[in-house]
Image (cartoon, rainbow, N blue to C red; front, top):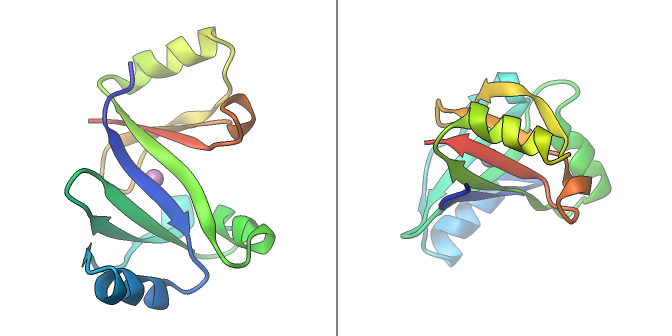
Length: 132
Ligand code: CO
């Protein structure tokens, strides 16, 4: 059911410093910061030849990224995103398999519908599925 790895998301304590590090030290193609108020994050996308990295920084009160950074002050891998053809079919299948799907499909940072799967059901890893 899942297809390509769409991105790996990394929560960062300093978005400018992290962007500069990927641009300069790692020589990556780093995009401009985008605010995603529906998700409580500011994101920077980094285009790699085979996937993307999504740097996440808290936006607004009660951002889920703030909670993550409180527990992981140096930052860390927050989620991985896999591509699916049909988000509703994927969601129904996962519910039938007993996985916890966190909420209804929402429009994600790329303007496509996404869902998140509970990390406790997937080896401690938060999974995002994106319809492509
Ligand atoms: Co993501």
